[in-house]
Amino acid sequence: MTVVLLLLFLLLLVGASALGLTADTRDSADWKPTDDGRRWRSRTC
Image (cartoon, rainbow, N blue to C red):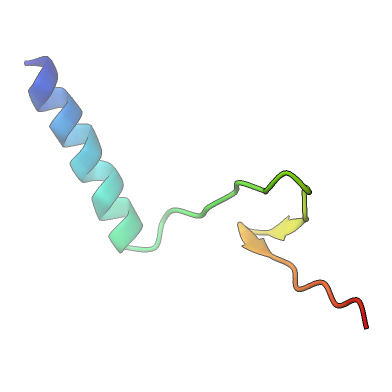
């Protein structure tokens, strides 16, 4: 039963990702700011 619940949870995540309902909010070690999960383009020049 636990395996079935885990598979259902993973299928739910895959479905949400396929529909574009998820966003990657992780920042790297330099903590660049994000806008709705998308990184800002920093220009040094």
